[in-house]
Length: 114
Length: 112
Image 1 (cartoon, rainbow over the protein chains, first blue to last red):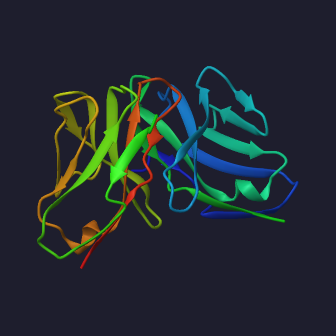
Image 2: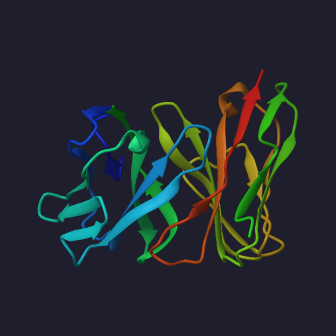
């Protein structure tokens, strides 16, 4: 059973508009949630995280929102830029708040059109 | 500071052959992991280690062995390669904070 689900395999937006990537999870005990970004032929890179005690975390153009009652988190990118085109993975740590064992969603391919 | 280094970047194996994917990190991270990425499947954990001498299985460990004799190195061994092991393999390390893993650039393996 998937612990994290990204139900949209792809998303296409215009440059300058908002990109919203979604992720649903099953276990209410997760302490942290992370987003990774991956370009082709490169390894994933850490983007942003949020603690389960918060409902929002912002870093520049990137904001992650957490809705614990709905077991849902979303990543907002505003404004979107062509360089944001990549695969985005949400991930959760599997053990006691430490993140040495991450479970990833299947990813969402974001394409930002000029 | 090289981060996480994976070798080789590309490899073609014949069914039944064995090989070792190398992974080294120079950040003194305690935690290291191996993931494979397949189309439509995301990243799946193969094996992980929480320190030298300590390893454990992840979600898809069958057909793979690991060892962790030093903090820096975490090789992944394919015992008898099968076409189902055709994938992109990523090694990653973490200091154990919430800021996530640092990934290598991957090894693209094809088994024919």
